[in-house]
Length: 228
Image (cartoon, rainbow, N blue to C red):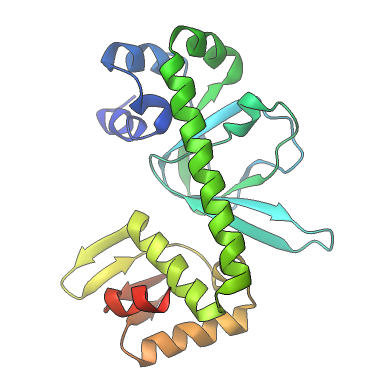
């Protein structure tokens, strides 16, 4: 495992709670998984026996509606963890995981992790905190769907993506989210046409510039005000 991979892993809640010796011991059980763009890691309903940390690239978590439509729950990047719910609740996966870009993941089996949790209860606390944060985010998303209009949800989604994937440049904050227009629409729970209209309006106001699978945020304060 490279120094960069170790640095990325250290950002995950699972490893943040450990000292150097504990983190090194846990890394011995980690295996690397590589996915091509569009490749599925697991599907909704699959048996869950591993959790994952993104080392490189982006992965999306999705749920399918009975009519076959896809709902994009979140997009995760380096240092972010997923799949830990099945560690505490061994029922089938509640979402599918699909690579948005080529990506590498660090996988850790539950059978290897459970004995480690017994010896290091602080790791269990960190995992529960991560699950609590995810629940709060879910509650916020549900509230936004009821109380916030589509442009407000688009602004909020862009700010969230910017916080995790944004790169400052001389021309603004470049956010290479790697999402198609349809995926961005799924992320905010609206039609592609409505989301495109909101983006075009933001661009016309000079708040951002639209690029292929990316935006350049030019006026982040205006975008923040619109997200509330």
